[in-house]
Image 1: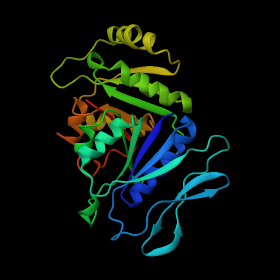
Image 2: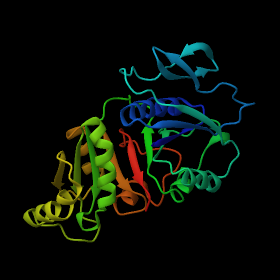
Image 3: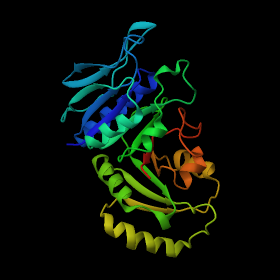
Length: 275
């Protein structure tokens, strides 16, 4: 069975990420492992589990209003994910990565904000973790509302496109009946690919070897990655953006590494695959 590893630092963004984890787990029949990374005696309240209409729902109590409860999305009947917790407070990212790899985690999910928290005591070095794990990490913006995933886009230079990533996306996409598009953006310094030639490469090398009917190709000549991402998110309405850690367009978006916050223009969940 697949396992989704949810990083819980007891923040609003962690709770928002947990809602998406519930939705993905429900659709893919995965179990959830909540990794608590905050110091319990400083922040005594955390995501807690409660059964609501037969579904295990995470509850988050804010310190300034213990009566306010934020539950996960309304899930239809059917599979109910098993949810477990593990304490990772004070554990180094390298040790956490070892445990993640040992347990063969399928997906890591972490909530992200656009501003630094006031209290840095629970900050996890996501860049360090990304460099050591062998599964992808899904970064969920704090203001993104969990919803059915209809469109996923993988951004890559087609000449360096990794078929194992597309197969992973197809496996995820089939549970949502989602469209998956491979968007070619030429790497910096490389020439554009001719439309006809790029389409033939996609068809022969990727589509025919993935066997996913809702797999599509888009060849863009846009060189400005910010403009290209804006079109993918706001023009083509993709629900999830995928790219590879430290490769090409990743560094154009983030620089050398991801820090504690997301760039303002990344307004949908970002799935980052290991290099």
